Amino acid sequence: MRSPDKKARNLKLSDCVVFFDFDNTITRFDVILDVLERFSVDRKWVALENAWRAGRIGSKECLKGQLQSVRLTKEEMRRYLSTVPIDPYFGRFVEWLKENKIRPTILSDSFSFFIKEILKSHGIRGVRVYCNELGFSGNRLFPSFPYHAQGCLRCAHCKKQHLLNDRWRDKIVVYIGDGLSDVCPAREADIVFAKESLLAYCRENKIPCGTFRNLRGIRDSLRRRFE
Image (cartoon, rainbow, N blue to C red; front, side, top):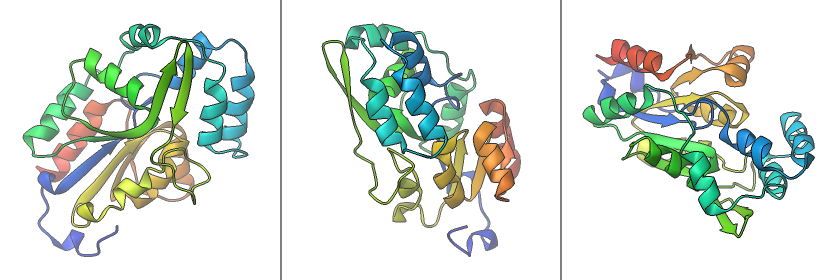
């Protein structure tokens, strides 16, 4: 915990701030990987993915290289994104958080165009989003990384900088994620919910965490803890 006096206070749910990863946490699968599989003109992206997973390159270098192989116009991408499924409990989770005066926040190493189009297609509003950006020129994709931190070799978007913001100093920070880009924020959060590779990392490094298969279980866990 970042603030030693938190345990001593009479805490309630509205004392929390809740951060979500996006791909394979809110969505049912990794959207970037699916885009690469469907719309790449070659398989160069696979070697970059393997290098990233092995820790030989960071995700900024990985994503920049991978998207060079994708051929898709903005309208074609929009049509594809409208078909992407999300966790069926996410919309209800968001509304429950808002009822408790919590504005949910998505932290992602994906792209704002992807996230906003997917949320819009599911009628979800009022979620704060921090992520990478994406431009289009014809059928070519050009990423940019406004939240890249020079000292972070792993991530294109250094998520932990948002958790360490002074505005959350007196809040209970909840982080929900599944993958390698979630390791740094999980180390800074007060409450962690993890699955897949993030869960394995937390267990290996003795980081306390809850597990989840879907977001309904997390909502119920928070309700039991604070209500």
